Image (cartoon, rainbow over all chains, first blue to last red; front, side, top):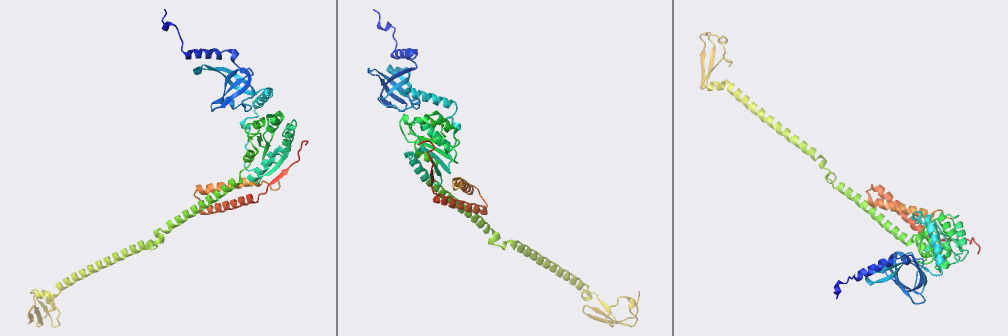
Length: 403
Length: 68
């Protein structure tokens, strides 16, 4: 017996992975176009999951990832007969194969859609859809032209919204046939007429309709005419999900006539609010400026120069007072000095007074007239002399003078 | 095209008004200049409001140039 463990085996994951490689590398299962009817159409964030089934009841699970979904030329639904383009893939965890769809087109319209795709690629290659060709839509238009079906709902909608939003704009209506075989020619003629008017913006609008109805807006001549239009154009054709080639070539694409009016004009109430805001800001700014100026004046007014003008000459007063004080002081000094000198003189004078000398014990001899005898030559014999002493006078007669 | 370039002047005036407000808000100007800008701004606001109030829609329907 061979032990069960000795038999070589593989895991389920490896089995599924082997099948995945086998199927995904099989040329016959790549770049397939499969016809079938859609069922169980379920959209998720990541993509769409659905089944394709045929009249025999055979079913294949399909997936359409979000990035492919965005480029679908239509919105598929359960029951639609379609041709799905894609490859077989295997989901390893479930051991399940899936048809991974990259493009889905309605059966029957396939040829027309492929032709449209081809035209779109050609025009894109020429650069007609380039973002850099897109011109800005003037914000404050003077005149707007609208190309619409005569007396259509789109026309009424546009006129109502344009005039309500921005009554300063003149509106020129260029009626055209927006449906049928003559539609492209009619729209081109309206476009050419519109180009002769001094328009700021041109709107081409049409309400929703079937793909057939909107086919005029995929016309190559019309797309090229819009590309050549010197006026910035807004296309508003069909509904949100309908995309026609003039949407790619217009300067701006919107989904409804109302959207076109919104893109073409400012909203007057918005502008009025803006004016109110600007007015308030301007008032505020001028008030601030005034307050600032007032504050500056107040700061200056509070400076000592204004609050106490005397401060200007207070220093001068103080200086003068100082000088005066010093002058008085100096004067009094000088006076004191003079007095002292006088006293000195007086003392000296006093000491020079002969009376004082006599008081000290000396004597002085005077002639009869009271003149002091200071020399023998001033005397003569027989002359009466008075000799003054501190306690009296001696009267004597000169008997002899000697030298 | 009776009134020449009314929206254009509206746009220019609105632009000028914005400039004035920015200037008065963001820079310190001599009072005389602020006052002059304030007066200009107020005049513009009045003009712009009047223009909007007096606006009359003008819709001209042109003949379909292609065959009916």
